[in-house]
Length: 138
Image 1 (cartoon, rainbow, N blue to C red):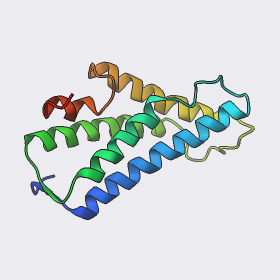
Image 2 (tube, one colour; image 1 turned 45 degrees about the horizontal axis):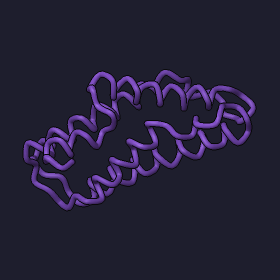
Image 3 (cartoon, rainbow, N blue to C red; image 1 turned 135 degrees about the horizontal axis):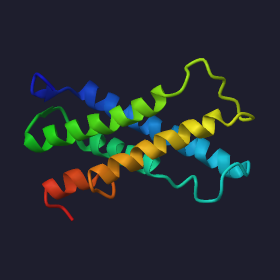
């Protein structure tokens, strides 16, 4: 961001990483419901939704020169990613995440809680609102 541009490979990386976050959280949240470890509805979460919305946003971007709108979106994406990284960082990297232990569920819940906190702090329903409002698309 310091150069004022973002390359196609950086955009693809952002898109791919958010797709991976979305699919991973969705997969394990669905497993939790299927194994009766969480109630129906647990698989419908804000983390999956917002990571998918970010992936779709970056899919639409081409190599871009930053303007105030894109700079604002990138800074907000960085904030959300920091929340997710902090949520993950609370867990011991040496923990064994097996389906028979609750640690993987706690990790998903911690990431979801960080997403919820971010949305509340920013007074938004989802991350997409940040670029829809700024471009006056409703």
